[in-house]
Image (spheres, helix red, strand yellow):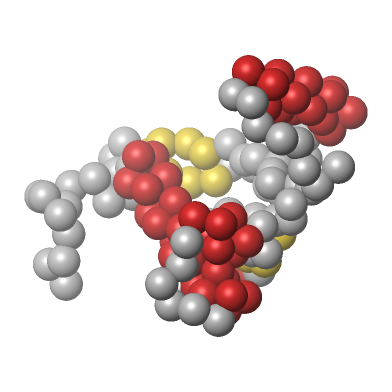
Length: 134
């Protein structure tokens, strides 16, 4: 449609896809914040509420042109990371495209969760942030 910023030659690149996905999630968090607070002009606290109420389903991603782009997930105050699923992509230089070459893989949360907790607590202490959702 000619609506790209710049030459449009980055479509499908890792950086482009990451920005596209971040934009989608930000939009959905703003919409959720407006829904849960009932106001259009949201505050920072409202945005946090919206982000912590996200439910990104396969159907929602498909409705926004992102079918199969990422796994579905939900966010809460207690869990900002969702499932943590990841996948491996492969670059096809001739076609100029990335392709998933694995299914989404579940991480070992028995190893990861304590590291997240330790880093979160250290960050909160260093920045004088009160812990919540515990």
